[in-house]
Amino acid sequence: MIQDLALDGKAVVITGGSHGIGRGMALACAEAGAGVVIAARGQERIDEVVAEIRAAGGKAIGVPTDATNRQQVDALVAACVSEYGKIDAMFAHAGGSGGGPQSDAPFWEYPDEAFEGAVIGNLMSSFYSCRAAAKAMVEQGTGGSLVMTATAGAVRASQRWAYATSKGALLSMTKVLAGRLGPQGIRANVLLPGMIATSEATTEQERAIREQRGMFTPAGRVGMGADFGALAVYLVSDASKYVTGQQFLVDGGMVNGGVAPPFYTPQHEI
Image (spheres, rainbow, N blue to C red):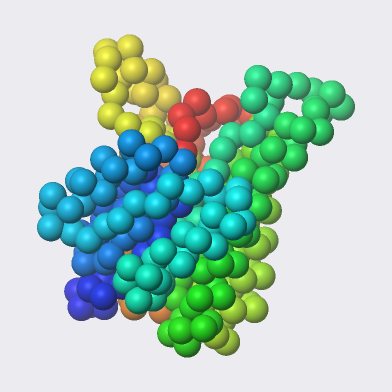
């Protein structure tokens, strides 16, 4: 089993990999032996994660990428293949809340551009990422793993009209990809994070807020990016080669047995 979980020789791309959940997955995959490609919009944050991985003896490169731009995503996958000779996994993690300051508007007043922005930022970015990766995997003939990031809010009542809807679409896309790409040896799964903090709390006020929000989950705390590391390694590894089309709730039990009000909206980015 330990050998099945090893990622030596694997090449992994992570969009939105410079902080939070993406960073946690990147660090874990690199520690398990994979060559990692960190993609995000901000060069400085990318460089920090790449330096952290390399300092620990791992392999990583950074490629500034806007995941909503099809050409940039295609170039990202090409950069991975150029660096490592192939691509074995794509974590289509990049996304956004969508809607901006008007995201709490009543449904009948919700602006077109806010809804469209969420669809582009969450659904289209994942579509571009998975499509580019799948094409390369089919050309290699080696199969691979596609992992998208939705939200626990996609399977419960949510006040965030566009965000929850665009993320919920990823659940259906996961099933379609798993069914259509399975014969090519490509599996597809989706993560559903709950209340996840993007970084360590630096003030007493932040710690108090997180402690209070953690009371809404059976686990008694908000999640951290590191909580996704082991699962990320598993979904890349050969240990999960018979796992596809699945939804992985990583929410501290919030959906299953939490006490959050029906329309409670987490305030932490993912």
